[in-house]
Image (cartoon, rainbow, N blue to C red; front, top):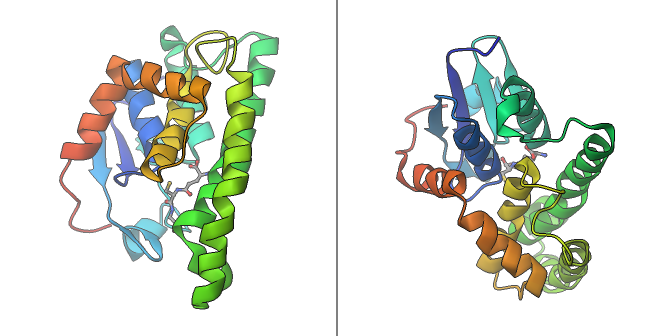
Length: 214
Ligand SMILES: N[C@@H](CCC(=O)N[C@@H](CS)C(=O)NCC(=O)O)C(=O)O
């Protein structure tokens, strides 16, 4: 059974955009609570009760608290099968798990080196500068590897899925960091940006006022 009430905790410009778009795609009514991002993560101490490392996205329903983009996509895909957010056939399922692991475990962490170098090398400004200077090279290698897999397809999987929303986060960040996106990734970025659910998510991300606490 689908919980009547859902709240997505998000921060502007974060990876929570993928979950916002997925919620829009499945057509489930939800409240979007915008948290401010600070040096210790999103929101304040009270948000740490929901997300120990103060990471967004978090989806709270009447019966659960779900962290991790992959888990949120999986929950929405199961509760709203008509939206075809993730494949259900065995081959498609394995491919989706592979991409979820790759995007969350390999692609996302590289951006952390760019955005939050002090977390890895402390206050040493020269070390931070070195991290900022060297990370884009590896990031380009990662992006090129993704683009190669998109050479002969419009979407990450055989058809549009939640993984396209997830990949969009990283193409968006790459453009924000002024990295030259490989052609097939640039095309993918434009394709996802044109999806009505992504457009509604971007608008929601932009227009939702920040929460006073959490
Ligand atoms: N694997 C997690 C990553 C969550 C994550 O790192 N979220 C970032 C925003 S994109 C965050 O909240 N960072 C706060 C921090 O690391 O302090 C997911 O995909 O949900």
